Image (cartoon, rainbow, N blue to C red; front, side):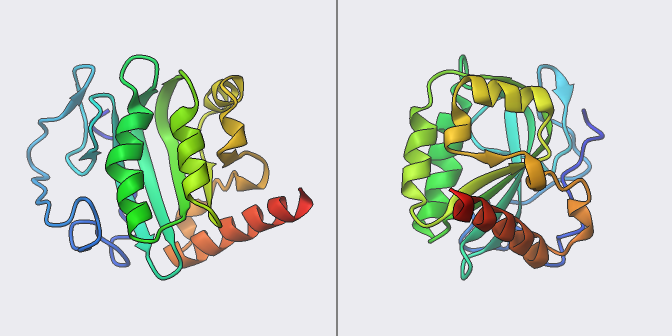
Amino acid sequence: MHQIEPHYNWLPYYDSSFDENSPFHGKEYNYDLYSTTIYGYYIDPAWDYMGSETLYIKILYADYQEGYVVIEMLGEWNDAIENDIMHFKNNIVDHFLKKGVNKFILLGENILNFHGSDDCYYEEWFEEVEEGWIAALSFRDFIYEEWRKYHLDTYINFGGLLELPNWRNFPPKRFCQIVKEIISRRIELV
């Protein structure tokens, strides 16, 4: 797991440690010291702790004017035991909601497992984005199946055209615009 790094190509556009509105503003990273683990496996020092011992994140991009945040995730998303959605909602989502963000893009190719529980935090998050949305890309199919089992597809947009395997090839503004266009078409069809 120590070889799984967050996406670095967008650093010229955005760095959460330099963003005064980020929950990780001022954080200093020691890229030579691997000290954080998930289930005894070291992870790259660039991942950020958000309250869960099994789920780490990296804020890849935030645009407060347009209301976007792009968050890459690593580990096990465990709502049943660790209540990861509570940590994520209270420590990250609520922070960005207060800054005017209402469009959340989650990247999950490094989420290795999901354990669901109830959907109250997802419902609350969905209601608080008002004119915005929550989109998830690049999660494994069995994660999406688990989300459907817990009816999280009511709150999170995923699948179909949102599966953009080449998302890394886009600059962040263009990537956010593409996701917005896909979500807008879905909303129009409803």
